[in-house]
Length: 491
Ligand SMILES: *Cc1c(COP(=O)(O)O)cnc(C)c1O
Image (cartoon, rainbow, N blue to C red; front, side, top):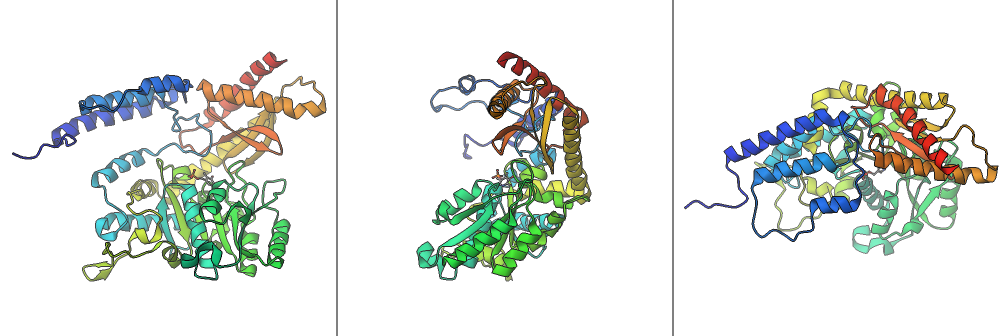
């Protein structure tokens, strides 16, 4: 009697369920513009929909489960693939990425060892080279795909720490030498807190350098901080520049930062999770054209390459700095070569051991549209955000704060606002907080917020190839309408 495993499906059954699912997803994609961005249902309603039952003892019909679950997700999710989803830096997912994830799961290579994933490993290595090429980084760099920007930055941070420690760090840990200091702007993403904590350095190891009026790191303050720490006998080891900050899309003066790093023998890391891909566009900022100067860089294909979650990418100038950090050779892995040729196993560059085939969705998208396609989509996102900023500037009820890359920050200010100057900020912060809550729960449009100099702002970020001009012009209309309603209530 052949074995009959409860999880297995006959090819016929798989075909039937799979075809139905693909049909339903195609219908869903087509219906996106007509759906609300989110239903804004309360958590208790969602918990009720998922149910509170205990683990089922008996199984259910697979086809029914897939269909029922598709309906649940189609009708009650927040859709970052919606043309009016402009919140946070989360992209709409490229359809080819959806198909790629299914194909990747079908082959299910373990991209830790070359012999377990021959084609997949080579595809990941090519994807890394192509990403480097796209943004003007050296293509003979090392790299690894990870879950996202946080992990990509963390991977580079650990490589930097290992490379710059002047004692045997692997063996002795942080207690072996002088206290190591990392410099970054006050606008740097919170990954740095997690990194120094996990690395056993503590948050005291971070110097948060003030920013200028454009939210870029103040280079004079950075120089001074490095000098002071050196005089105190500490060991400055790393400077982080951000290429596209989370709040406003600000790009640090990367050329200057790289010169400072060269002068003081510091590791220069660029957090380009969001903005580095804009380096491929014609009008790219001069600092974005200097990414080749970085010792390491973090990028997020699940942001501006529109890959479905999750995929981040860490690049390092020298591949050995990754293997020095992550390669340990236990006796139970035999990954040294195949058919007499040397092989590369991604486990040597990664905090992870077993690894999925994240590269496929990125690789296929890069092949589907090429450099040209990405140049076009990223440029379009940027020019749409400039159009949005122009519309905001023209309105006498909206106040523009910033526009950089594809991020716009602004707020609603009532026309007839008659309030004491010292009460103004508090009033407007409260008003715009209320507006954002209504917007986020309403489903017509999705924005997020930023806080700059104590001002609570609305923030639109376009990393969305489905957004077009009509969506962008709707933003000022919707915010003005909601702003008037809310301010009428609070008067
Ligand atoms: C998004 C982002 C991160 C974090 O990336 P995740 O993919 O969310 O982990 C870090 N830095 C910057 C500048 C970002 O935009």
